Image: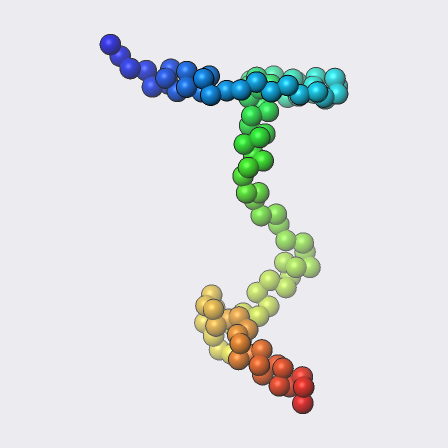
Amino acid sequence: MTYNVHESVRQLKTLMQAKLTLRLDAQLIEQAKEQARRHNKSLSQLVADYFVQLGQVPAQSPLPPVVASLKGALKGRSGAQEGTDADLPDEQDYHAYLARKHR
């Protein structure tokens, strides 16, 4: 007797599935069906894939040009090595700033 892991997983998935009824615009449904056909998926799988994506952390979008131009502007202050926490303003810098500000 052979044990087919893939068949067992498929059966388990079938047992765990629940039915969902959605009411959507007919044109939107047709567009979704066409999208599913293009990707060789069922409409249910297309919707399931979308629901999975909803739970994922989105990839970081690129920085706007102005922000990107400022990135790294504080590196190398006070002779610190690049890539260390010493690159960033610390509490001493902040206290010195406040002292100058309130003279």
